[in-house]
Image 1 (cartoon, rainbow, N blue to C red):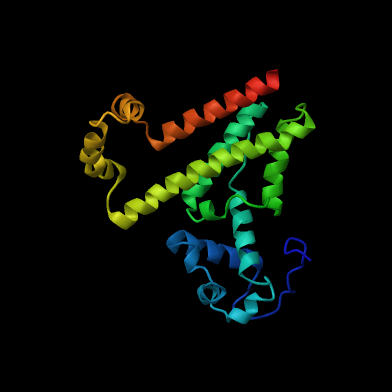
Image 2 (cartoon, rainbow, N blue to C red):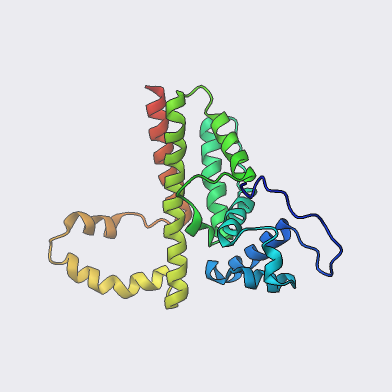
Length: 226
C-alpha cells in the first residue's frame, strides 16, 4: 500500500508524540538548511528526539520520506487564474518560488509524476483550466511548461551553488572571464556570439524567466488557435 493510503500507527502515550507531518517537517528543515545530503532517518529522528526505529512505523524508508517532502512543498504550489494562460503562468511562477525557497526541490523535480495529494490537487487545477483543449494535447502542454520551469530553476540553483562554492557572484565571474572572451572574439571566428554578448541586454534571472515563459506560452497559444 502506498504511503498516501497507508494509515499511520495509532496514537499512544509517549514522551515524544510522532506523526508523518512532524517527520516531514523535520526533514524539510534539515534539507532547507544543508541540502538533501543532510537528510537521513537517523538525523530526522535526532531532531525529533526519538529513536530511528520509531520512524519506520510511519515511513518505509528514505524514498518515501523524499516523496512526502516533495508533496508537502506542492502545498505551496497553488496555480490560479481566470484562463488557461494565467493558470499555466501561475504554475510556472509558484513552482519557481517553491524551488527557490527549498533549493533541494530542484534536484527532485522531473522524472515520474508526483502522485501525492497536494501534487494531484495542483494537477487537477491545471488540467481543469485546459478544459476545451483537445484531450491529447493537455499533457504535452503541461509537460512543456514543467520542462521549461525545471530547466530554468535548475540553472538558477546551479548558479547559486557555484557562487557559494567559489565566492564569486555572476558579475565577478563574468569580469574574470571577460579578457579571455575578448581575446577569443578578436579572432573573428565567433561573430554571431560576439555580437550577442557585446550588444544584447543582459537580463537578470527574473526577466529571463518571464520572457522565456512568454515565448513558450505564445507558442502554445498559436498552436491552440490553429
